Amino acid sequence: MASKQLGKLRQWAGEVISTRDKTIVSDEFKDLEHDVELRRQGLLKLHVTSEVYHHSLSKKKECEVLPGDKLLPLDSLGVVMIQHGEEFGDESAFGTSLVSLGRAHCQIATLQETFAISFEDTYLKAIKRSEADIKEYQNERKKLESRRLSYDAALAKYEKLKDNKNSKKDKERREAEDEYELAKLRFEETQEDVEARMHNIQENEVTQLRDLTNLLNLEISFVQQHLDVLRDVKVNWIDEDLISQMEASHKRTRRSPPPPAPPSVIPLSSSRSNEDEPAILSRFNSTRSKSSQPPGTPKSHSRRSSKAASPVDTSSSSESGSEGDSESDPGESDGGAKKKKGGLRERARSLTKRRKSDAGSKNGSRAPSRSASMKGRKRADSEATVGWEG
Image (tube, rainbow, N blue to C red; front, side, top):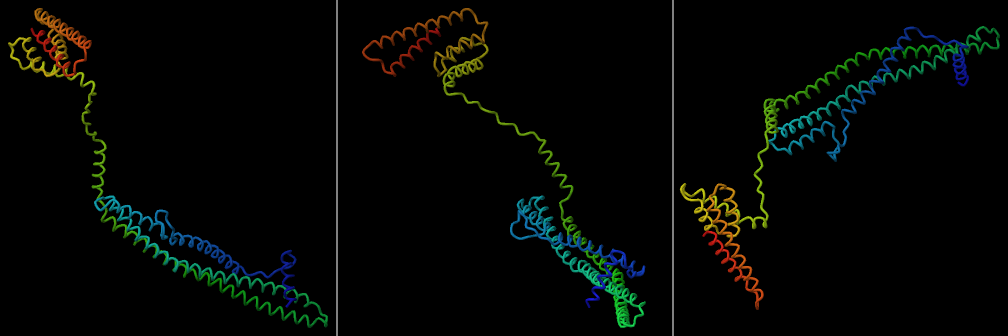
């Protein structure tokens, strides 16, 4: 046994350094090997890509917005669309559309899971069976290479002893010949097995084509069911005309001017209103009396009546009335101007007397009460008003 292994090692080393020849297989055998090698590489690539595709179909992930269960990405999208659509209520067209499409996505996710399972049970298993056949071929091919080395080593040993006619080595020559015949038989048997396996791999092309057809039908069924779900949603979908009307309504709403703001009322300050209220009321009463008097009534008479009817301070009303008359009636007669001047003089005298009386009362035993001073002021103002009217 050791001598056989040593002979195989010498044969291999001699082939590497090109000092020994090796058995050459037929061209048909080489063509078969080339064809099987192409199929082996193609099956390896198909297996890798199919695993990636199946992983993408069946891989469930945990979504950030849906903590807890792991779902397919399409299923997660459907659940979120349903939840968000229900927040708008049944009266919202956008909300109902979200719910409808979300439910459709959940149904499609279920179909996708079923398709992933069928894909694994049919096409992936078919690829794995073909790869198993290729693997058995590779094992037989390695076995054939080992027996070829044994055959070449036995052949070299036999040829070396065949020309030797020494009687002492006849036994070795017969043993070498038997070893050669046995190695040759084993090599040919193994070669036949390898060729049979290569033919089986080629014949499996029909089975692979049938598996590929089943995959096509499976994908068509999945896509058809996918399309049916979406068409059911489309049947109950919102009308395009309604969408156009909603869009036009929103545009009109954006273009319409805002309603006018209510007029702002500027409040008067307390001090300003208290100071100007008598003058404002005086002017209002004067204007009203002018508008209500008949055409033949003299201006002085209307002026006196308006001042007599005014409930405010006479001093402020007389000043505002004089100013209003001077501005509104620039063409008044000279007699009226003289009367006005005389009234002003009388008013000034009364005010002077009142101040003197107030100063005298201060020099007395005690100051007059507030009510007494107010009465004195009213009396002086009434005297001044009467004098101005006269």
